[in-house]
Structure formats: C-alpha cells, structure tokens
Image 1 (cartoon, rainbow, N blue to C red):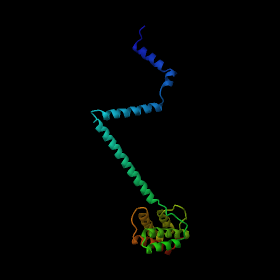
Image 2: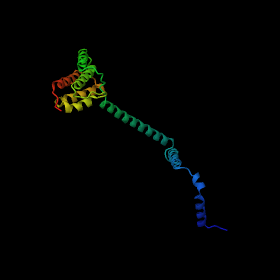
Image 3: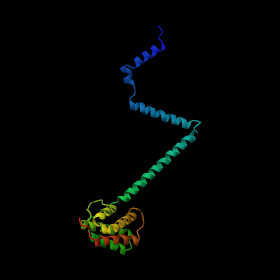
Image 4: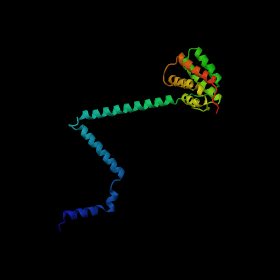
Length: 200
C-alpha cells in the first residue's frame, strides 16, 4: 500500500510527538550553545574565506578586539582613579588639632610642603571635630568635611572647600605642593577657628 505525502507527514509528526523523542531532544541551553557555536563557526569561515580577506581578515578582527580591550581598560582605570581622588580619606589618627598644627608648622619650616599640606588639612578637620562642628568618623574625606561645614560653619565654607580641593589635588591628584597650597590650607584652618558656628 502506497502512502501519500500528506499521510506520510501526519505519520511522521505523530511518531516524533512520542515522549521518547522529546526526552532525547537537547535542552534550551544546549540549543543556545549550539546556535552560538554555529554563528562563531560561520564568522570564522567568513573571515578565513578568500572573499573576506583570508588571514588578513582574522588579523583585522584580532586587532580590533585588542584595541577595544585597551580602550575599556583605560576608561575603567581613569574612572577608578577619579573615584579614588574624590573619596580619598584623610587617615584620621586621633591626634589633636594642636598637635597636627605643630607638625604642619615644622614641615613648612623644613621646606616639606607636601607633608605640610597633609598636616594642615588634618588640623583643620580635627579642629572642626573637636568643636563638634563635624562628626568624627573614620574614612571621612576632605570633600565630605567641606560639604558638612557649609551648614555648620557657613562663614568659613568657601575657605574650607578651597582647602579640600587643594588637598585632593596635591595628595591624590599628583600636583606638587608649593607654599601657596600650604598657605591656602593654613588660611582655611585659621578662618574656621575664627568663625562662629551657626546656631542649630
């Protein structure tokens, strides 16, 4: 007995619908992996074929991938450096503001402006903490201290903000300290000490 094309299709579909065939089918992940490998194979075949430039095509793709990796690493590294500069802690030691001021003056007199900048900023922040104008906490950055001072000591906020910017540029931004940088931060400390806080 001869079976027609329509009947053959129906019988084949009926046979393939049996549970034994479904159990043998690859899962979704296996099918997705196979599809991805097929596309990669197609790409490799295209690039290594004579119409796509052969080995030259592969070299172009490799060069593009290397350039892409370098650009991504450069951008990520730059973003990380910027984040570190913006959130660099002052490394509080619990030393009094007066002790920091003495150290700062010693560094300044000895011609060590980088160290003087660090100590003057620490003196400034520690002085604000001692006056309860700034919450004492580990990891406080110069920028955070300056932002808090805008509400507790608005009369000195501009000088403190400038000092924090100068501190970050020298300590974390790689700019060499000079007598002007030292004077700016020392002046901010003096301004903060001379300014009365706003009543809560």
